[in-house]
Image (cartoon, rainbow, N blue to C red):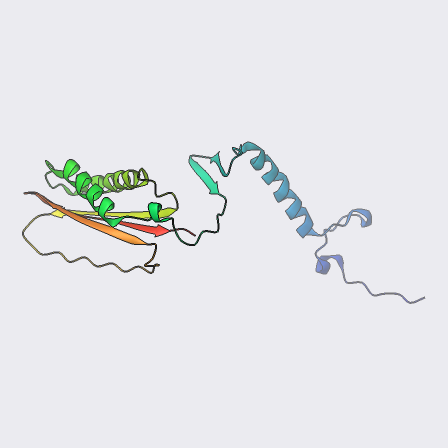
Length: 181
């Protein structure tokens, strides 16, 4: 009979317990993680449909099943003219009586981004990622130049821009529509 040489248990990653209950540490950790994640998974309540939605803490997570469409339908294509009209309307309606104050304009820029994205989403651009940017500054008769670069598909992606100016502030609004395939 030949005797095999065995490495010490500490080298093999085994816990130092009795011979009958030696279990690799890695397996115990995986088991603990899965038992914790089971309790988290039971807290989720997915809604059965093509798009499932569930509440996970304060944020709502929406999972959409893939459609394997690489191009948008012609009727759902991002229209820069519509988006520009919405931008102009939102900027004019929210900024017509605003006097420049740095803190107020900072909060207002965040609010305007949310309003613009909501109004554009209402147009039915379901498969588009919308990126809104609003810049508000004090109008002191100085020049401002703004540039941006994006990598996108010119057949399906587009953007719109609008400006607004009153006696106290100027504003530039941008919205990018990027098709999700």
